[in-house]
Length: 84
Image 1 (cartoon, rainbow, N blue to C red):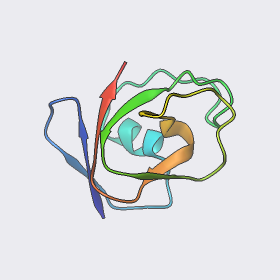
Image 2 (tube, rainbow, N blue to C red):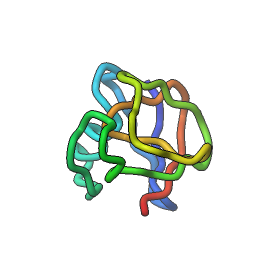
Image 3 (tube, one colour):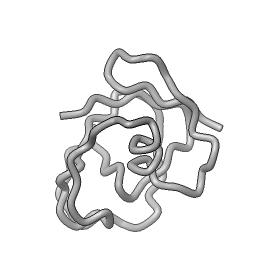
């Protein structure tokens, strides 16, 4: 189980590590812009402030070194992200 902190909010736990980060964010009623849910479009691009993620599928959308695609990754440590 890993903790996720979005911007400066209180962290929440990701208890099911099989779901994507996007799914966990939705379960917390955190609004994230997305389209494809598979790493193609890049609409969910998010800045990773700290921690590590693992991709469930290889993303095809362009992302910078400090960005992640929540639609196709899951945390593998406690993370902090910043939504655009």
